[in-house]
Length: 124
Image (cartoon, rainbow, N blue to C red; front, side):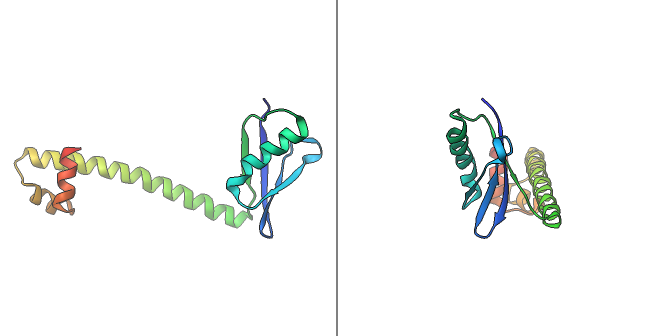
């Protein structure tokens, strides 16, 4: 199975999809990005008679917008990592506070969370 690349560029209300691995860089289109994979697979089957391997979707954006999108994704990934670290630290802190004999309500007050959330941390 051969892998294919779908170069997607917005043209009007459609995504224009170029597949450079096909002869003459065949072009097709889709309304939404979630339709690109199957659209390319259908085109490859039609043009080659073979089932495609992986389809890599590459969205072509203006450079300034690409930079903003990349930055937003990086920030989201960092926030997700920090949220996981925060939850683990809160869980460990709650358990240490409970081991020191503090009530669930006091633990919640100290951690700045509800006593219900503190209770969840202690049972997780």
